[in-house]
Length: 361
Image (cartoon, rainbow, N blue to C red):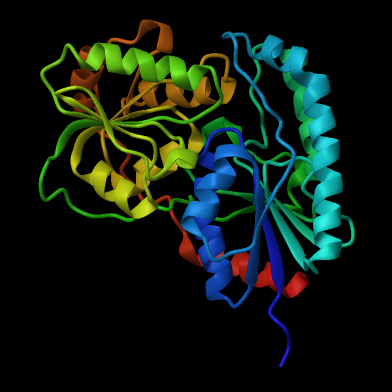
């Protein structure tokens, strides 16, 4: 009998979204008999270890990206040398992990250095068409994005190829240079559908993303929520502190550092409105659960700003800029929107992609 394939799953550590959307991939790999090894950094790695304590896991170099202001080009430009060094160290680390631990294949969620030429490698992304405020910057960024993706054997896109879809122009259409590698695998979410049997909270705020913006949003939410006659649960998005004592700064606010997937799933279902970033993984979770939402893009993160604009224009979610947060009005407006309706998940496509991947490893 042949040995099970040993697969390295390595999501990016910017926020928690890349890690959460890898959870269904890990589960599908396991269901098909693969042995999974995890690698990431920071809070993303803490979350994966929380969800899969039995799996072997390793720390990769962190990009340590910060969003100090709302100018995406400036945010990236001053940090570019640091990012490039991290990508190189990451590439060397993945190569050494593959050799030392007998890795047969690699699935990298947006980690540019997460490939090894001697192994079958997949790049998971919803951004094959990166958006930027200036055409020249956009063309240069996408040239290098495609250059990186072409180091991998496959490119998996967590969306459907048809309209309507979730990612819009971020992954539609596929450029000719990527068509041979690209494969839509349907949306990915660790959440499961269910009904709200009781409304425990008027709103749940789930925080994530790079500092210092995560902390700034948390402080703004606590300040405004305290003056509203509504029940709030705030999940800080700090899995490294899981198990800590919940905080109640005001009678109507409960704060927890993190929650397991099952507990968070139930808490969202038992809340009237979801509040969080307009990251793509959050969008996929909302598509699974069908909840109304107030989305607040991370300042300076163009991808989140594009998604927020798309869903606001389509009257699906209400969106506000962080600097103009008006929590009470935002909750009222969120309830007027339709939320996501439609089937954007394709378990057969994901299963088929992994079958083919394991055969190629």
